Image (cartoon, rainbow, N blue to C red):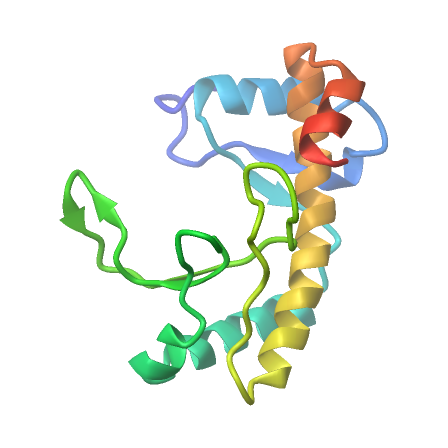
Length: 159
């Protein structure tokens, strides 16, 4: 199905991750749409609600509190509000998160957490782990569709 056939993006069922039955649908979604909706991913609704709540709370903090965990040239993880698109400042704020890295292209990056926001850290870490599992499966599927060697994926994407 192409974007002109339907106004809705394709739906991929993560419940099929244990088989390769979903790979043709994934390939079509990537080729024809460049995106898809993922259902049955296994992430509990409670965790999804909690991450939305914690993000709303974080972005409601004062500018000074958010900038205390601002990302830098040497640390890519943290708050940022000055991204540019075509040389114009975006109207958004972000909180980037990833694993601590001692080597490689992200060397020096480590998660930063706002002071006194223990619930924020706990929920964000839980969501990160849950989403990382789902993302790894999607990446595996994309890699298989591209004919990417599994050892290459493991070496370069830490799966």
